[in-house]
Length: 135
Image 1 (cartoon, rainbow, N blue to C red):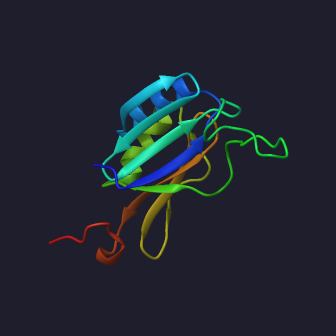
Image 2 (cartoon, rainbow, N blue to C red):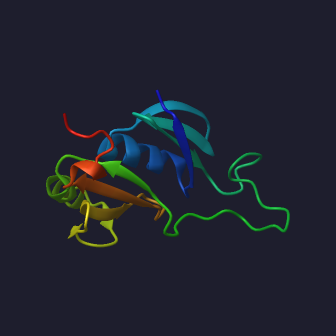
């Protein structure tokens, strides 16, 4: 059951659903309108909204500014083997912002969803960096 929600603005909700479902292991919870979908992966609920998709997360701000995809804020998915996953995603044509790097807590790489929103894939190399420490 999801305990945290993140909303991403996406250009194409259907393309985003396919990306997160097919490449990153999310499950579609609901897709009640073309401009909105809700996906789950473990404790994370991902809300996908198209800009100007009516009332809700994609609605224009009072000054008329529309939400837009992209930026640098992101969520992180812990993975077992970031190199192997990165290879599979490259073969599938997924866009990357960088190559796999090793930091103080693990290995990481940034991939982009079809709208350019970043997702960090993180393989911990230190027990303290794991979401659930090894027993």
